[in-house]
Length: 154
Image (cartoon, rainbow, N blue to C red):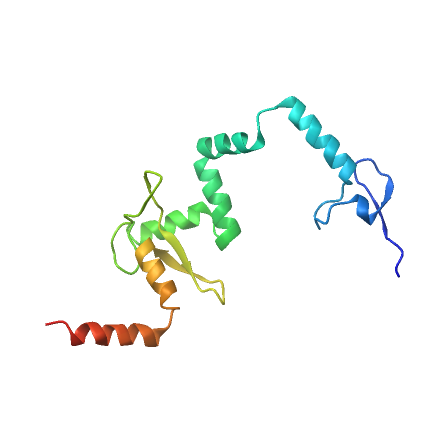
């Protein structure tokens, strides 16, 4: 059996056992200090965190979209808008603007990417993005579908 390792909290600077810390790799403060910080933040602004987040997202849609694009696809909102402009504001496959609506708003075009290499390819409408995903990006399936459509196209 191994002895429990000790860590130093960066806030209170006390040496404590590993169990006194959360399992977050980026977190260097002990559970006790984190609890104190959270209580102090709540005392400053008792409005629920979820509500504050909703207000922030409403007031800063570009910052939120930029953050999400960077996190999911490694691209900035500026890069997204540049690709969108290059495509003329339409889907790279069907050449139509997005028509899908979510909560009363037309969705943005989706960032199409290779799931293996993580390379971004272009922006697609929901229909084309879903079709590509359902066909598993298999060229054989696409060719077979084209042949099928041509066969009955009269």
